[in-house]
Length: 150
Image (tube, rainbow, N blue to C red; front, top):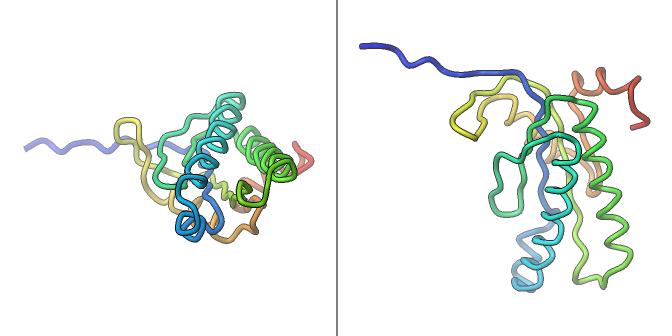
């Protein structure tokens, strides 16, 4: 019996989700979904602009892949700044805050999706980020430290 080969690669993963999403859904499901759709449009545009690819969306989370750590960090920073500007211009019930984690690591490729430690670490970093913040892995920080103002 032939073994199936696992396809792998090293890539940069950006993980994000909404702060307090469950509470927002309990308070006003329709408004929360409308707000999420607007914010998803913002991140989709920025990911494309920075040569990334969204490979998974579930609930309020977005997972995106980048070939460049610099592009991923700039994308994450621009997204948080855009969301802050949006929050300043809409009523409180329409405001959303996000956390972002960015990691570079080994992943398993399965179709259009990515799995493995590289993705898991990005998700853990996201949970460590402050609301409105971006948390970087050490390897991403070392790469972008001298190349961005982040």
